[in-house]
Amino acid sequence: MDNALLNRQVVFFAGKGGVGKSTSAAAFALYAADQDRRVLLVSTDPAHNLADLFHTPIGGEGITRVAPNLDAVEVDVHRETHRYLDGVKENIRRTVRSTMLDEALRQIDLAAHSPGAAEAALFDRMVSLILEESQAYDLLVFDTAPTGHTVRLLTLPELMGTWVDGLLKRRHKRNRDYSHWLGDGEVPDDPLYDVLSRRRQRAAAMRDILLDDQTTAFVFVLVPEYLPITETRNAIRELADWNIHVRHLVVNKLLPEGVTDPFFRERLAREHRWLARIDEYFPDLHPLRLPLLPGDVDSREALDQVAREMARALDPGR
Image: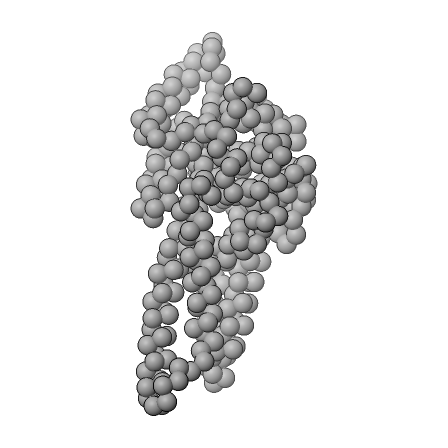
């Protein structure tokens, strides 16, 4: 990883829970802000950590200044899900016959707890932030949910685009058949078709952003252990199947060289073996190595220390 990351407009941090993903995202955001970049740090992880890391209340509605050049927002999944479904209800009220409206709205209420509802709502909020805040900020940094949720979130533009395309084709055929049946050649107004078209355009815009290597970068955070390495490897492969290519790694919590205690010497030897495996599994990625700190990242001073380590790794000449 190098300073090319600073030239991106969007950077996603992902990884298995507990590897230091939120800390790495926050440290990178601090580093970028210190380089005079206007940065918005966004948490889409339901278990938000940014407020604890910065020791500052951070809400889901407004944007909070947490450091010079650095703002933050923690997206409230519950609120966004209900906001998203309220928008769906409003569209339904404009397009569904009154005799079917009550049942349609009831089904939408039930959908709030269905699989994928939260991801769809988060995706909608993420698209809004990227498309609407890009003029106010040079860089948007996303601290995402653990790996599985993130993979589903990042592949949603392709899935939604395909799904909406199918709906649009069927809707177009229905309107054409209706026009033919009336015999006047006039295609009827169809508010639902317009809604679907706008949603398709948003999904396409988001897909273009995710697939543009000059605009967006993906950083996976891991520690040199079996499960995080395996999960990262599987996630990178799955994203590649959707043409989303991960090119950066953060290898976190590395032991210092030269330990003398037998327990830590054994741990260090094991760590070296896993680092060699990381180089073998990810030969084309750019690893950034961060040390294990003596204490927890439980204060702003500790977070600033991680940011300094991030700066040294990104810019060894500092």
